[in-house]
Length: 108
Length: 118
Image (cartoon, rainbow over all chains, first blue to last red; front, side, top):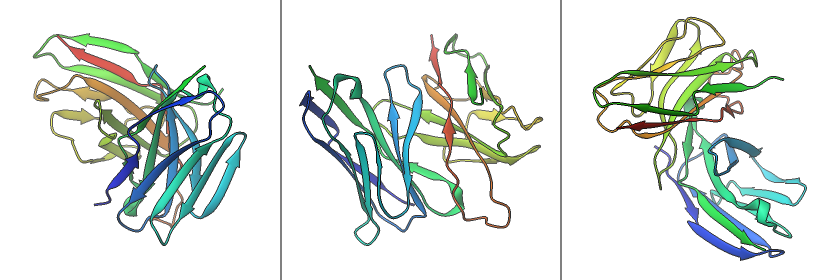
């Protein structure tokens, strides 16, 4: 079974800082999700990627398949970015294995 | 608007009672999933269904039951056999790519139901 490790577990930043959240996994995957969960609990998909890099606004996600590692970057962070960020990987059988999440707090 | 709805948002039940959580989607997705989330842990798969009238157990199915009588609906019943039912429950759905059993398709998540057992 795939294990997914995220770091850090908690992250506090000042508004405007560049933020990086890391995700490592143990076996081969077909895709990797970055998800955002706000205090109300609902989950929004930020990125789904299987190679390279994707960018959406101030968010950038990269993946290195050989090293089994992905990063989520937030540029010019803002208090509204405060949320839990979750990495999830899709192995065989179309199922997701989730990391335990990174709680991000951006202070004004 | 297409999406996934879960109701209710908050649910309280007395110990020993069964309770059913609703999940409806109008995305015309074939596959639907139920996850459980506990503090400090990743989401864990309870049950999933890839087609009407068929479903499979996930990693933590004990104490839960599901049905899939309609494509749009995948209700989850938390039975009295579930020893620690207090948790946040998330429903998700995705398309399926016929002929590609290993292909992952993006899952879309509902807003969740927070169940508290009193």
